[in-house]
Image (cartoon, rainbow, N blue to C red; front, side, top):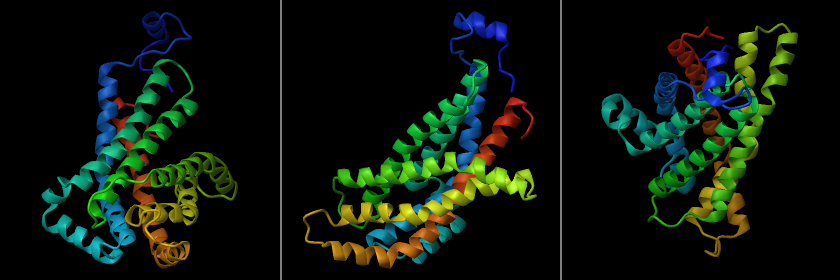
Length: 273
């Protein structure tokens, strides 16, 4: 993949081939445009699902009723949905994540360096902080309880949840994709399935962390809620929450990521993969 500046220009601008080059401003703007537009589309279903999961986990509403209310709002007053605070927050999370990926790609391409480790580091750091902050905000907004400080243990559970998700998303797809191609699946099918399936599967392990984090916000440690109460809560909410959290994987890890890549390539005049 060629850099945006010639190798001579990169050396002249950075003082040597071992330095990092700065991409042109127009490249960075196009990176932002791709991230912003891709996030705008995927944030619609993710907002609906994430709000419903929080309201269901905290007892403010049921999963189905929350989704129906959001869909009615989207279909009847789309301008209100698209300017709602929850949509704004979700859109911000994914714009930041895709922008980190795009800008890392551009810097690495301009510097003639591999993007694998820098891209993993930048997107993981940005997404971990942004996603945990979004879930904290949603808990405060949509729990139906008076706003209160979010427990540190809940923050920690969100971080562990997202570390597991990101590790799965980056480590397993190459092996799964290669195995599928060897079994005569098309490369495009193998690529898409390998990106989606592992992250959906890990939800069965990470959803308990997600639910307990919210339960600890609504029912603080020392509130009299016993371990048996929390286990009963998990059993009640587990399966439907896994289903909902798995549904959001399609836009978040599939269509959004592919859309961002396609838009970035189109805006930069690069061949589509």
